[in-house]
Length: 509
Image (cartoon, rainbow, N blue to C red; front, top):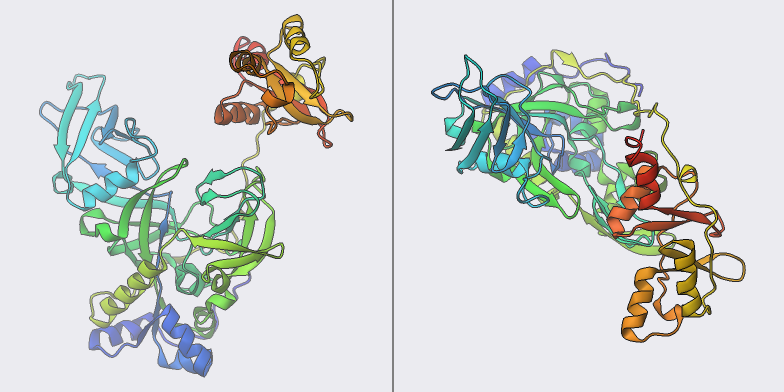
């Protein structure tokens, strides 16, 4: 991203803060400023406005809090600890811990997690603390159970390594099955689209080249005042996907803007309210701050492709996403937001009022966020075992009109539990198992086509073994036919094949 930082200044931080002090600062929320700029042009609008406020409220999985519990009598070096049965990270000093938003309860997984613990603390509720230790001469206590509130803690500091993506990809699903993702439930055959982010109110998109955002920038965070402490993890300004690392005092926050959440069949997270005041210090900032939903674009990507480089189905504006309908392949598809535009607007408006009332002043960043960050994927340098190394190749197949007695005879003679059913060109059309035959005997069904499974979960020869194991777990099956590009049967891979090859020999490399 080429910013050309350093162009002529329109107004300084000192001038704006002086206006705040005297009560004559002009502040508009980002959507108000965009409308003014559309009416008058951004050049004229920027001469009338000093600050544009932004807001976002969405799931920010990379969030968490550092907590200091204080010392017990006798003292204890906590080795492991739990808050409401959610494990907290204890690779820290004796009574310090970090609770991550996505950590899940050991008794209520997928329902309650670290984000809920943080919300409970901010709301002043009691939280059960349990801790274990191995005991030392200076820290002899080995076990602890008690209840705490946020007021019992010495420090409770929200530290979020990655928040407020500049923009988010929208999500859809081209496959024939439902997908459960961090972007919510995605229906088959492009059945729906989900998206996150606040578009015209998006904090980092309003200062596209990050000329006012950096280390030390004061922000709205969780209903209180926080600070940017650096670039966020996965900061990728070249793709307009910059992120920020932030911190703030949990004791001064509001549970309205920090909410624990569960994403169905994916896990737990926390919704975070965050807003940034953008001073219109130069023409470039003033121009990007005027961008409307119609001018802010993202990609609808296909989460049905299990790859880090998921293909883009189409490019779409936030204006179209917010209508609740988009068109994919000439078909209108329903769209739903995962973040709250209503609360994002509330945050931008609250920040505006804080500034107008002299409660919130701007802070000049001591260092701007980098624009030249190289975003690197994790390369797997160990060889991953593939299906072709494990699969049985001499697997018999049958036709759908085969006699059930002969089908049972093949399974017994070949010592297998799965028998692929193919058409006259050798293409897979179903599968029958020894369990299916037992069911046929119990219910008196006499035709193979009445008992075979027609929707078959398959594998490909070069698919990683871990992918096959995941399919077996997801669908509660023990074997998959291996097929080529034309769905012709090449072999079979089973849980027994994998365990004999890798578990018995010491694990998958």
